[in-house]
Length: 360
Image (cartoon, rainbow, N blue to C red; front, side, top):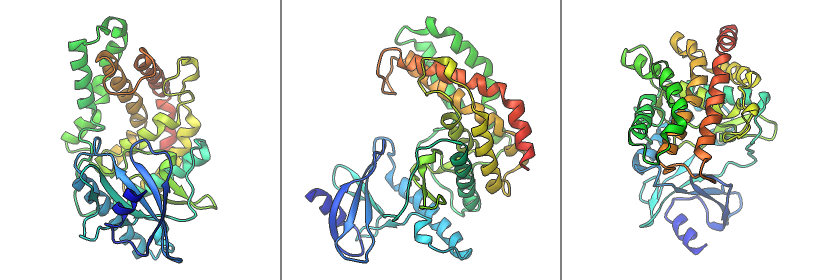
């Protein structure tokens, strides 16, 4: 841990460096808890930034600082108590930068939020909390005065994802096209409708917002009474359509089966999760949403299983070069499961539209 201590020593922390231990099991960044050696001083979180995914660390940290500063100002203006537990606080290095490069890896430090809990539970109750939290997150950032950069360019751009699939079809690198032609055809039938967001944006009818772009129940911190403290894991915060945060949450949370379920009978779109999340989201977000954004929330619920089917299928055609697979047909199984979820969501569009209207 001497190396970790050396890294933390470059940051302007308040107090001294005590024990450093692994924290959590994040899939993207490695995190460590840094105990303060001085009583009454805050503990810290040290994180290694995944430079392979987030290649512009300057942009990444500038985005996060802009977002957390703006939220802090809002909370202060509202007279909110316990602000330091309701927004992440990043610590600069002694040179004033918000990351440190050790010659190989990029690191950052933030204050550890005490007595905070994360949940993995996906049920209507926690889906409602997630809807409120992510809607409120977008609402607080609706008037942010700076333009954020795209930390992962074209991350949720459906036209770009379709172009990747079409290239994979044309190349047929792994010789698998014939067995998946049905799915390629079905995806192409829906292509025009599913690229609606990009089209509406070009026509000036749909705005881009500051979105989290990785909406999961476990990307929120709760206090011991079950109240949401704050939204965390801000690396993917960037300009996008509000559909990103709405649809991405439902793709995983409203799936009654697994993302790679071999038993397609288990895969359906759970309307109870949709209703809970949509209710919470609209409670905190409808004040700034435009009619066209609200009207297209059911579209968002279908967009993300569609997008993920496109991505899994393209990778299968390319010979499994992007996603980690456990067996040769893994990406095909994923594609079929996501397509089944898409079909189930499509069947529920009228019910989704009716429920959204009832929440206004």
